[in-house]
Image (cartoon, rainbow, N blue to C red; front, side, top):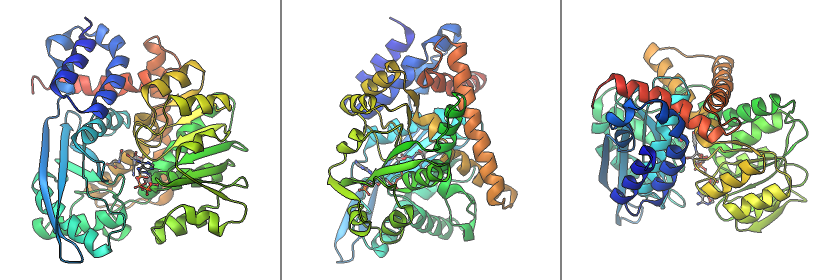
Length: 444
Ligand code: NDP
Ligand code: 2IT
């Protein structure tokens, strides 16, 4: 049995009931065979066994009191997966579906994504099954304070630097930072995605969505194509989705649909992003409101139907496994040519295989959504240097990083005999640096 297959089999045996972790590991490991074959020393060093085992996984209780005085208890997680190339770095997700399997899949992906950015950041991820939806600001604040009252002892600007993810945006980062500073008495870059008034970086809010579109733009440019006049679908209506729409529209694309977990809106005239921002960023409302406010727009209950809308470019920006084989078949039948993953693992393994065999340019999450964490690393650099860069400066660095990642994974795919397979290319390019650093540091 190939070394890679053996490690995957053992991972599944040792971590039963972690389907998302298995899925991410399968996607990553299967693409690594060509590089592992060139380095027989990896097997002797049990490099892959160590790579798939988190350095540390912290599970903790998060008690808090709701507005009615009822005591509530949630689960807290921080998986410190790999620190070979830098301090653990990765977001916190607050969503009722969060469990160890999801945090581990996100953490494993994060190791390679962070390596691809070219910046010195290791991989980690965390979160809670707390659901911020429907909670008052005061409840969210008390929850965040309780969460940080445990987390503070595990994080630090040179050890582990969390940020946002689903359900964790500027408001939550503010409350988490305030509690960290209160407990530790230090104003440091322990979290990224901070507000601009207390150490944040310009462009961090926009970075994941903008970065995604920069990569799609580069992939199109290399094929003599542009986004101008293209029809685009964007799933989700959160941080990543909103700024993907903003940049796609700025480059001339027509975005016709978006969704939240209740249903999707279709606006054949092109989504009015100011209306979406008002509903989502200011009112924290539901996307169905959009159809009430914009003449000609339609609202449909349920998410899946979005993938039946004809488009040139699909940008899944909500959550894992939003595009399964059935949705992929619909997209292909209707003529999709580019898929850029803004969310983490939004396409199932059979969905990816269908896109690739149909010749769709498929840009995998760990490359395509790396703009967020890359800009987090730029925020860390500004914090350590006590500096503040202009919007143009950070945006230019972000764009250079995204086009660099595109060419790096494209080159790795060519070098290892799988031209155009960016899933394999991204995995190999990301892994090469981590493997090198782990080999250099001995058996740790
Ligand atoms: P937000 O919380 O801002 O937005 C999430 C969006 O996705 C919301 O519209 C939400 O709808 C929708 N969504 C969440 N879960 C589901 C579900 N089960 N079914 C349908 N829709 C769902 O999160 P982000 O925009 O920050 O994150 C989106 C994705 O991007 C995630 O996969 C995240 O891991 C990834 N990502 C985020 C980065 C960042 O910098 N923020 C960086 C790189 C990747 P509803 O409000 O109804 O729940
Ligand atoms: O999935 C991701 O890359 C993020 N949620 C962003 C992580 C970060 O540390 O900025």
